[in-house]
Length: 101
Image 1 (cartoon, one colour):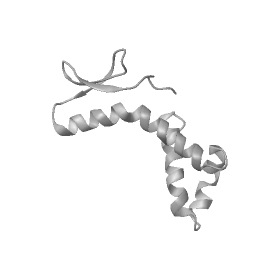
Image 2 (cartoon, helix red, strand yellow):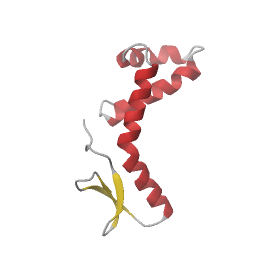
Image 3 (cartoon, helix red, strand yellow):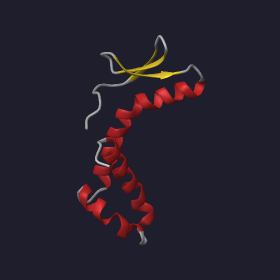
Image 4 (cartoon, one colour):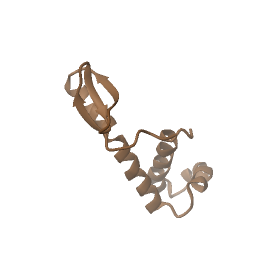
């Protein structure tokens, strides 16, 4: 699964806050309060957050992602739990975004 390419941003639209990728609107968040603006900014940052998360996993993983997915339950029960838990969460988020889980 692939998301809409490009750097996403937020603009005031006719019915709410539009999420755009420089070529057009890819979604609209309805409302005009502070929380709505924060939600729109978070959604607009999603592609960059995903890229950073993938870079983190690449920098921390000494094995391929499939290895960690298979070993997750066993490893979570030992002394490496704290340091690897963040890595496992990152792997799970990437898989969710890419439609693998």
